[in-house]
Length: 160
Figure 1 (tube, rainbow, N blue to C red):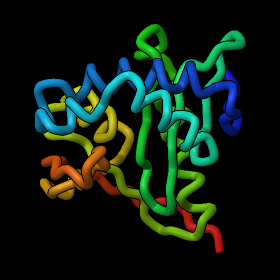
Figure 2 (figure 1 turned 90 degrees about the vertical axis):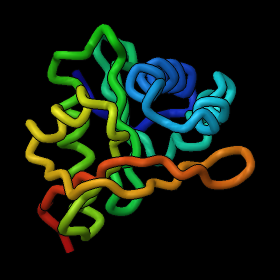
Figure 3 (figure 1 turned 135 degrees about the vertical axis):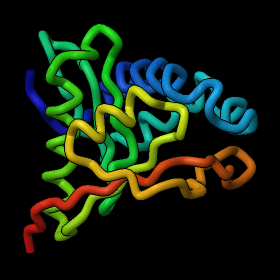
């Protein structure tokens, strides 16, 4: 497995992993308004737009997962279904933590919808702490959508 910054040509693979993983972790756990906003096209468009914030994990020449980091927030961590249960997710999360620290932040944070118990267990095993419920504001086509989520935090090594 290798990690590298995403390229524009990675966008279709990132979008497919994101679309599938998002549905696995969010359907039944988020407001209907957000489900309606997360069309196939929305993942395609956002994968292209967010290439500059994205690091991909490549296994056997194919994108196996990705992470998006902005400031001190680990915004997205997704792994292709065929690579779940391997080291891909842990490697991507460690890279996200490194990036947050390299940007001078001492703590990283991320949001996980309450019903996504698989992701919550993964973050807890990875040393993240659940600070409790909060209203995460997700982008929708007509503005922000309130999504009940848990805020997870982790201390990282800040680099000045």
